[in-house]
Figure (cartoon, rainbow over the protein chains, first blue to last red):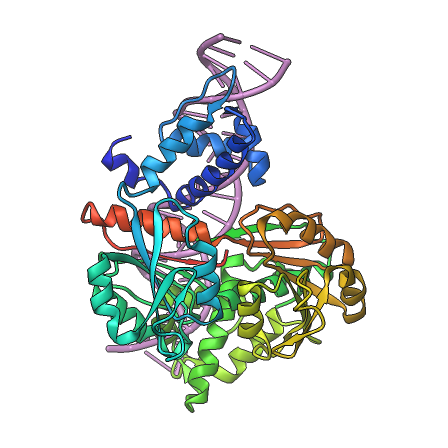
Length: 225
Length: 225
DNA sequence: GGGTGTGAAGCCGTTCACAGCA
DNA sequence: TGCTGTGAACGGCTTCACACCC
């Protein structure tokens, strides 16, 4: 599992590794030390082959008798997806969604720290939420640089989306998680991940309609992409 | 564009149609009546071929001179993805995320109506948020049936995820949007869409790390999937 | 027998390349 | 010339099928 081969890991596998790890930590907490591919598969509602494929890609070998060693696997996944020193995250836009994310993510992930939030609301600026201080937008450059923030989660209103993204990137952010319905573009060297809740909801609505009007088999989609 | 051919439309295309429609409504509001595939592509940051493919799949033909007629295209997309009489949605779990979604979605989409929220918090039950009444969990069956709710958005804590999903489906919900980190399984005839924010964030973190340690070109991923 | 590991095949969605048209 | 529409090639991911091993 050298530098080069890590880069070859498909996006989808990276996503599943993140999920495997959390699942493994849960079963590990119950005292289990080993696990079979089909057990992981069952938890994730995917196939055992898929699990073995993913583990093959990260170069982990299981034991034929007992399956995979949970502890070692968790550590290996960590070596692949975590940064050794962790990464800092800022939330841009402390509306309901920004607040939800702050609440949901802060203090939970070992290696990802939400260290700042930015908003335009005078009532929020200067306050702390879940231990995360909120600053005005004019402080972005200063705080991002000082804290060495590498990831920005954007939850501002659509009208502000593009400007906020530009501000974040100019300040030095290298990864953008865009929860705005506005499609973005980023310069080379910056990673962009987008998720649009309205699209998801409309998609569910579409398939509910279609399922209702026929005997089309059920389908499962997991997103994150 | 008959019944059967609609079902063949790929998931990804359905997602993009939802996005095209919103983009088209925006440019339409500016007085534009026609649009070229490359213009749509530019807004969405995708390729013009992709746009034409999607429109080909829904059987819409443009004009070689002027491109696509915006009004007609919006209507066609509506015919495909909307239910004629609309669909009703309930939010399960009125925490920050549930509140954000309620706020974000209520009254916005023409054909999707958030008509109820469910929570266990005594302080929220009986209240209305954004005009959406909040009920206790024991009312799920009654309200879903009475209001004919077909879609459930699940934002409860992980521990409650599975039970809430089962409750919703037993009550008659036909589509689940799962924002819980717990992978779900649904019976045939129910559509499931899942999105896990932690996975997305860890994925961004991973690629930021990788980009930082090399000259790997930037990548764009859009999710909903 | 019941696991793992993996080449090969299959599937799905995107992109290429180009024909056709005003 | 500049656009649309589309067969064909391509690429990425998943699944099949099976070798191998305790």
